[in-house]
Image 1 (cartoon, one colour):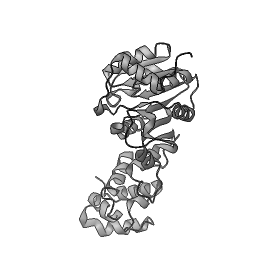
Image 2 (spheres, one colour; image 1 turned 135 degrees about the horizontal axis):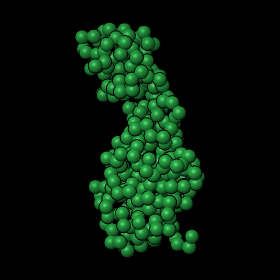
Image 3 (cartoon, rainbow, N blue to C red; image 1 turned 90 degrees about the horizontal axis):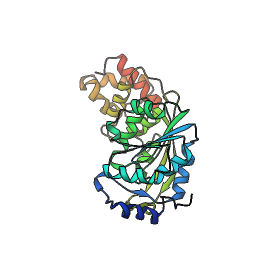
Image 4 (spheres, rainbow, N blue to C red; image 1 turned 120 degrees about the vertical axis):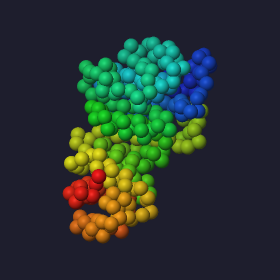
Length: 293
C-alpha cells in the first residue's frame, strides 16, 4: 500500500496529532512503532484468510492493520471511547475489521465469537495488552473455554517470564501453572521500551501460548486444583506442608505431612519445586482425605 504503515514513529505521531489524541496513563496506553516486532507477532500467530483474530486494546491500529492483512476477520475490542473514531478512520481500507467498543473483562466472549467468528476455521487472540490488566485478561480467555488456537500477546517482560517459567526458579508460581495447565508457552522475543510511543520504562516481551487440546494434567475438579496451587504459594518462603495446613486445618498437620510423603513429596519442599503432575497428585490426595472445603 502507498500509505506508510501505522507502526512508524512519524505516522503514529501524525494520527495522534490529526485526532488531537492524548494518552491516558490509567489505561496503560503505549503504541508500538516497530515493524520488526509486528513481523514476529504476526509470524507467531499463524494466521491465514480462513482464520480470525481477536485483538484486545488496538490503540490506533498498528497491529490491527497487520492483522487485517493476514487474517480473514479481525475483531478489535477497545475500551477507550476516544479511540473508536480514530480506529474507524484508519481501518476504513479494511472491510474485514470490526471495531468493538467494550471492556474485554466485561464482554460476553461466547456471544462475540458467535457474532464475529462463526464461519472461520480457527481464531487466535493477538494483542499488545495493557500491563495493568494482563493477567485477568489472559485468565478470562483461558477459563471461558473459548475455541482459541493461539494467544500471542505483548506483555511486561517479567510477566512473560513468569508464564513460561519451569519449576525450581523464583519466576515459577501460580500464574505459570495456570497458563501451562491450558497452554504451551513460548517466549517469542524481548521488546525494548524504545519500540513504543510513549516509551515505557520496562522491557516488554511477546509470548505465544499455544492452546493444548487437553489440559496438561487430568484433575477431577479444576477449582480445587487451583485452590491447592494458590494455597501452596500463599507464602513462598514457607514449606508446602505449612502452606497447605491452611486448607487441612492445623490440627491435621501431622497427617498432612504423612500423606505428602505417601505421594512421594517431602513436606519440607517449597511450592516452586513442584511440577503440575505433583500438584494434581496433592489435590487428589487432599480431596480423598476430606481436607478441601
